[in-house]
Amino acid sequence: MRKKTIEDYVELIYILQHEKQKVHTSDIANTFDINPASVTEMFQKLSKEQYITYEKYNGVTLTPKGKKIAIQTKQKHDTLKHFLMILGVTEAIADEDACRIEHTITPLTMEKLTKFVKFVNQTDGHQRWLDHYKYFDKTGKIIRCTPETESQCPIHGRHHEHLS
Image (tube, rainbow, N blue to C red; front, side, top):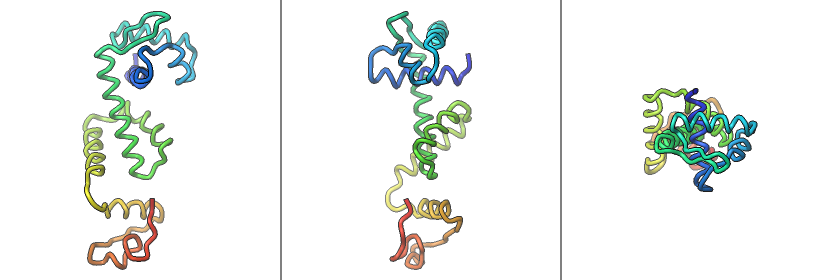
C-alpha cells in the first residue's frame, strides 16, 4: 500500500472523526469523489495493516497507529499550507499544494519549514523583511531600507501603500 494513500485516508478519517464518532464509507467516497466500493476495499486493507478498526456497515475509527500517522500528516499539511500562504499563495492553492508536498518532503526540510513558520508566527513587532518580500513579489523590485532610511522607503515611509 502506498504511503500517500495511507496518509490521505487516515488524515481524512482523523478530521472527520472530530465531527462524528465513526467514519463511514460514504463520508470518504463523497470527499474523495470515488466509488464507495473502492473505499470499502481500502478500509479492509487499512484494517489488515492495523491503521483503523473497521466494522462493516458500522464505520471505522483510527487505531493508535493510524492516529499517530494522521496527526503527523495533518501537522505537516498545516505547516506547509501556512508556509505557502506566508509566501503569498492563496489559501485554496496552498491547501492543494500542501496535500501534494506533505507526502514527499524530507524530514529535514519539514523540520526547517516548521521552525521557519514558528519563527514567523512568534516574531514580535514588525517584520520588515517580510514586507520587503511581499513588495518584491508584487513588483519585482528589491528594496533596501533600514530604520535610518525608513522615511524614504516606498513600503515603510510616511506615504507608503501597504501590501497585503
